[in-house]
Image (cartoon, rainbow, N blue to C red):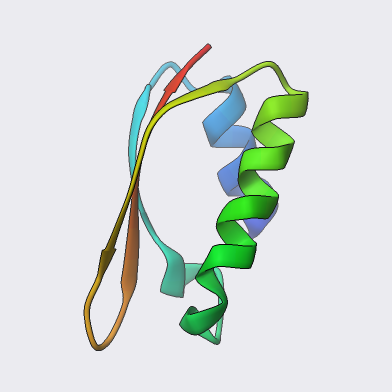
Length: 71
């Protein structure tokens, strides 16, 4: 399982602006994805990173969060 802190660091400090985040890499229970996304969005807002696009792609095994940010 990947660390949430590493994801947050990448979202804030990386030169990339588009991310495909597999929620199952960060949560054991993928059905709690909405809480995870809300938490990450709150951290980004405090860090002055604007979410330009946010899309959720769900299937039976995983949830992928398509995210575009502006720094």
